[in-house]
Structure formats: structure tokens, C-alpha cells
Image 1 (cartoon, protein in one colour):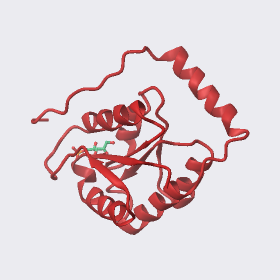
Image 2: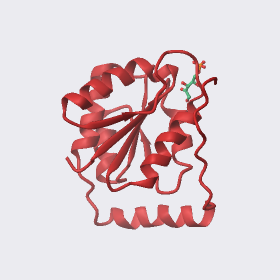
Image 3: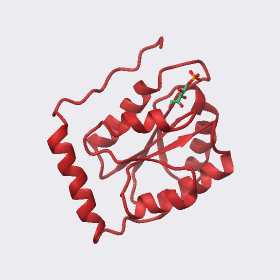
Image 4: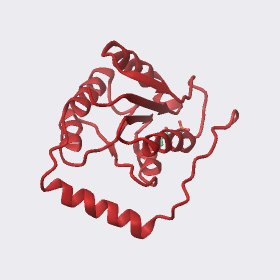
Length: 165
Ligand SMILES: O=C(CO)[C@H](O)[C@H](O)COP(=O)(O)O
């Protein structure tokens, strides 16, 4: 287990699945930080995605992230706007395995209204238990880094999550 902490965030569409995922991670011995949301009340997913992405980007050696909304798509869009983040939306355990092996993804995005709890756990376990292969994939990750350097400013958006959406 190389990852020291898993930071997890969700909106109302991901709240139920988040509870299942947190329980599973804790049973596996992972240290989990839950940035919310903490109920199924309607919230705006970009705040939670930004909070997790910022924390993972600050310490990518030790931290990984999980983001869950209804589809996983909006969370993934926001997370990938942070320098150093490689967020992957996965709907199959094959994708979970391959995005670790080839993309060295550091945030897993899941759709709480797209997949069931058992599928989600299979995807999560495949993602966490598959090592990055390196080799030829380092070339692609280098190119992703070049795209970030070309297109991103050094200012990173890290909004505080408001009490009211
Ligand atoms: O999946 C999502 C973003 O990609 C959100 O969970 C979804 O947009 C929320 O929609 P609603 O407010 O209708 O529940």
C-alpha cells in the first residue's frame, strides 16, 4: 500500500456510493479524509472536486483522490484542470486497472447513478492494486506535463466549500 491517504469528495448524486466506498477503504486499512458533502442535500460538485484535486496536487507522492457525482463526468472535468492531476472516470474494473497501469491516474472518478456498489468496489480495488507500468507510458505522461506547462497558469483555484450551495 504505497498511498498514505485517500481524499474523497462527492455531491448529492455521489453521497450514497461515497458511504460504501469509505467503509470499504477503512476496512482495507486506508486512511481516508472525507471533504464532503455529508448528506444528500443538493450541492455544487465543482467545490468538492476542487478541494480534492488541490489536496492531491499538493502531495501527489502520498495522496490519491476519489470523486463521485451522479455520472462522475463533472468531477472529472474539474479535477483535470488542476496541474499534476490525472483524473480518470471509470465504469469498468478493466478501466480501473488500465488507468493505473498506463496513466498513473491519481484521482478516480465514479458515477453514483451509473454503477452499483459492487461494481464500484471492483473498479476501486483494480485501481488501487495495479501499479503504474512506467516504460513507454512515461513518454505520454511527459507530454501531458508539457500540455499543462503550455496551457495552465500557475494560479490554482482552491475555493472554500461554502455552507450554502
Ligand atoms: O453528475 C453530475 C455532474 O457531472 C452531477 O451529480 C449532476 O449534474 C447533478 O444534477 P442534479 O442537480 O440534477 O442532481
